[in-house]
Length: 208
Image 1 (cartoon, rainbow, N blue to C red):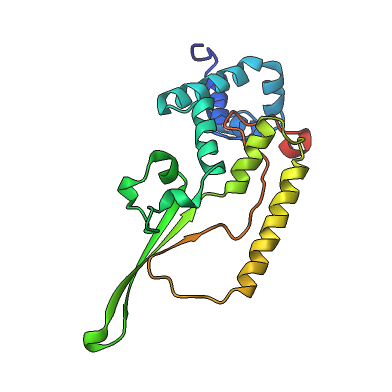
Image 2: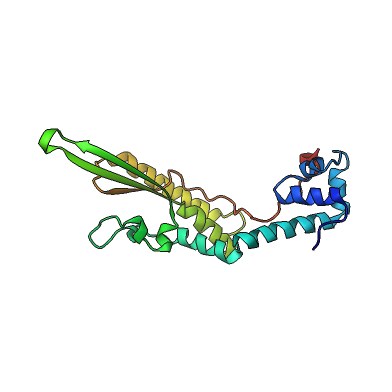
């Protein structure tokens, strides 16, 4: 679809594709507040053009629905054992396979000196933060219609697991970690699945 003939309509489509509301997209194109949403209603080609712009950007970036599902599955089905070798040692980050490496969102490295003099030991502590497993499971469950739109089943499971983790942390005393620690998210929410497409039309109350 070529650029829209009307420059203002094209400007509105460009702004809308970047995530602006219809009102903000209209203002960016010089359309007054009183008519911005009416233009979108009467000119469906503006939204069609915006969707085309978004899809083109996704194609250039290599983003596809299949790739998103693959990344979600990697997080949803991640296993702590994937990070350690048979001796229980943390695998070097460069040696991890793509599935395990893609679930890591942060790595903290801390070097400590324990003891004094000749008895001093240098200890390296590595802490890995992984993506939220329950959030990814919730999105996949909704995608495959394993739960309703509200995701009640997943929300209930997430809440139960969060309570158990919290109780376990309260009961267990903190211990020194010599090799590595995996830090799971403090909370296990199951947010609504977010769409990478163009934002939906806002209500009149939101526009005005």
